Length: 316
Ligand code: G3H
Ligand code: 13P
Ligand code: ZN
Image (cartoon, rainbow, N blue to C red; front, side, top):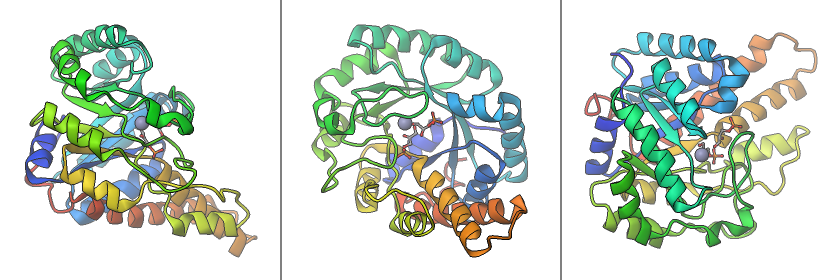
């Protein structure tokens, strides 16, 4: 099967109350770990590439890795998606590079400018059969190339349900990332984790049948946090979104759930453990191999949290 867009995946996810995992890929081992998991669990998958990933790994290297992943897994629907495209030019480049879905993140601009830029990307992408994710409302957390607000302020910048119909109608976007209390990165909450389910519900009611996207959805799994802190790392206050909240959102209109931090933490925890337990080890295959294995196990677990395990065939 060639790369697919998100269209069928989202139709089935919406109809049957689950969400597709969108995992950030930056190198070979991360991609292999994710693909081994979706293969075993027979799950559809979105492999997403940020601007930082394109710069880190090289556009052609990542493309080649994903091409092999698709070729080796003919029964798995795989979408190659641009995560947080910040300009029309970047989105255009990814459409031209063969991505099957792109995100234009203009959510930090005023509404009218967000509409204008998103519409421009939609016109270019749709003419070439590529799906477009847009964003309304602002997430917290700062990543390398992603504009965000302080995690303390997320509840001041939630998506306004009263704007979503106008935004979707004017832009023609295929899915909408909403701000519902999550932040990017490992420090999402200071105390009790809380999501704005009222916003998810209200947006879902305004846009029946329309797929929503949850960014910043990593859970900061305790097993990895503990290993990192035990083996010389320092992430004592890291806190993520409880998996029960992810499962609940996946049963609502949220059809795509973005996960990067949990991949980073699985990688870091495994590598730290190898270094601590075997200080004489210097073969990268030993510690990168351990990271790849941990990613596979973690992603398998996530697929059941999202409810998309076993759904490859119906999404094909
Ligand atoms: O949402 C952001 C993703 O975690 C990508 O982060 O720009 O550091 O690759 P990055
Ligand atoms: P996390 O930082 O919670 O993994 O979110 C990733 C994300 O939203 C990528 O777009
Ligand atoms: Zn994001």
